Image 1 (cartoon, one colour):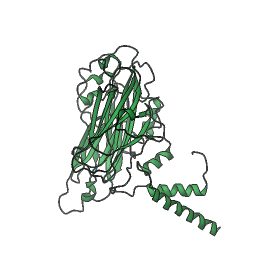
Image 2 (spheres, rainbow, N blue to C red):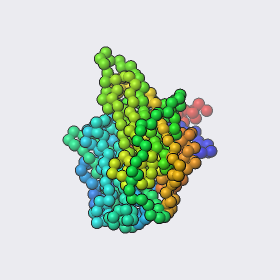
Image 3 (cartoon, rainbow, N blue to C red):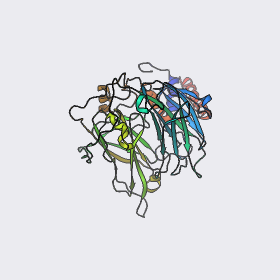
Image 4 (tube, helix red, strand yellow):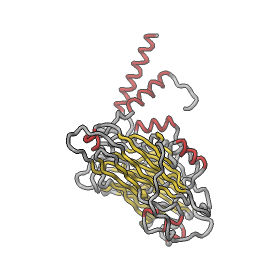
Length: 443
């Protein structure tokens, strides 16, 4: 805990576990724990084959689970009120080195007790077929906007299904589950999306890049604001960043992978080398872009996005629809592990050019009937973006997951989803006591 001294033995134990858990650089070997930092305090739940036995998820909390068999549906249960919108998400976490194919992915459905589907979504690896976090999401819209279906208060089911094809690994995937809620409005709102919005490509910001190390997950994503930022990414690694985008503001991004020298005599080429994914405050994927790599600088730029507006949620286009929430927008940058074979097992430079165009005159936040929780931008959020504070440390809304401390976040980053095995723990424990015994003898 902060401000407290720990004993010498505890210090050695912590150091031993930290050293064992730290990544050793480069592409990760098959079977290693996922480096994804789970939310601190995430409770473990088990997906059930029958809705009758479904374990409960509480909105605002994060949960850890797993999925193994493709095509088998796993049920979880959540209680929702009549006047709140709900956003469920599942982040699939295959271990590094796990074989995945184009069609592998994760599916999520929200349904009521009568089996009516409120919404469903899928996340897949696509052409960039290598293991990395992928997310699926679904929305439950309350009141009259849902047309009577899924609008009542009561029990709903979050149904998760692993998508797969012949040739993919049978190894289980970790899951991080979350349900966030958004209060209804005090009055009526429009039910049509904005008819037009500025769709010209933004001019990327210029200037000298500032160093900002990305996180390993949604939970420790590094804060960014408008500007030029630089980082480094290893083959097989995903880096996470977050940007506060308020009502009426328009987000833009391009990510440049820096030049590198290949040891090969042949002209190097890595298809789908870089993958950039943007997710909204509910962890729903907005859009993604990729880039091949030949050793020259390569850029993945997001196509123009609509300014954040409540009414975007009624748009037919998914990209516009998912720009219907204010709050933290998440950027995931992943590097293909094949880069290690072609260009060497080394980190490559990244440059992120982040644009946030201010809102126009007269733009106001929706008149919520309660605390919007994660779906707002506060002064504290702006400060976190300026300093680079990780996720979970700035938002105090009721929809937020438990805040993490720097020490806890570092522990989870090293240990990952699978944790440290019992055998490793015993070896470390013996090593610790050997050190302590030697110290006593020397003393």
